[in-house]
Image (tube, rainbow, N blue to C red; front, side, top):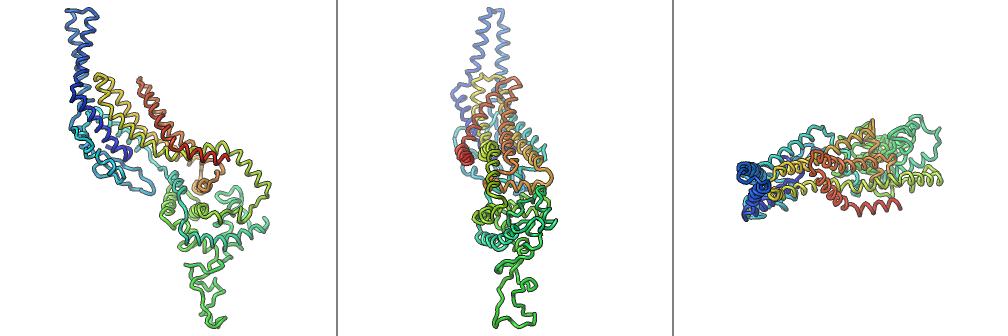
Length: 546
């Protein structure tokens, strides 16, 4: 039986273990006969109240017999357990969704282990050592069938969608945590920034529009994505790499490890094969050459860009996920986008262009843009901060809440069945409750599927470059230029919470109040999950408002 999380494997076992303990108490104390005695007494009382006397004996017997047969049927399929439907005869399993990081996930199961901390922490739910009362894995036939059908429908719904995955969200999560900690990489970035970018930026600021080639002006065109005027604000500028007089004609100040000496380029080195005498007796060339800034940036093995995006497993994962989750104008643009994000995650003392290189705008223009941007983004930005902070704990807590709610339902089913007097309606109500809660997982899957389509719709064409520009802003603590990521975060939060609530409320259309009750349960559980992020949300919001 396929379940929806590792936790659900164990909460299912716990739920039915508690249910069996409660059932043992009811049967062991003889309380189980009370509903049947009440049925007989009620039939006799109704006959007496109607004055049937002796002429109504046959009707009385038929009425009592019908009620007793129904009660016996409900008890046999909803209360009495059977070894045939024991959970130990069913391998409860969970198959994680395939992701770019794990394209072939390994199924976790109760019998084979999940590979999570639940295996040791909750082992007593599997071996039954939590109690010595009977067999804790037995399940009544009706509830076992409902669980199996609900799981089947749930996974059929999910398998009916070709999932392009939640990979873009995975990229965003990885981007938030990725950082450059390797001191060698940081030194290489620092050197390139000082020896190449600062001189190139200084030269650019002295030029006029007429000094830049038509190709360069196309790069700086505001409509040219992913470049535009901001292209010159970072180390891997396309303009600096292609425009004559910049990176292709500039060299590092000092030798760079990994770049061999090239006498056609390193003309300031002594070439023994030239036939000329050394400039000084005993001259010794450095061990490494001085590459051009273009070579230093673009080299596929020793280049600064390659070191920035592949120096650790986290960045390798980020690169792999981004490559499969998004479309890019070219492989060069893809690497540049990741390198620009890496620059934003590096030490800000040498990546804050306005502080070190100066801004292209005068003071009043800069102030005006900041004030205008703050006013226009305040409302949307605050909502986006709340959504961004709340969405991660919610997406983690709600599936756990689903598993715990199911455990509670399973636990109390025998008691509710008994207290209802083995009423036939309990079969229907219980089935609706289990089916409804099980399908929450399908609703969350659909919410993520829709979210992926919304991202594609809001970033048409080649979204990889544009999305990464905004991710760079987000991970650097800025508000994205077009607010698209903020809007998408709010929409995903709404879908993730709203779809299960809509589905649960609509179950009330079948004529029972179980949908309303489950909606209240879901609302209260969601509120508890949301409170886990309330403090951080408040802090983040206050920080933005200030």
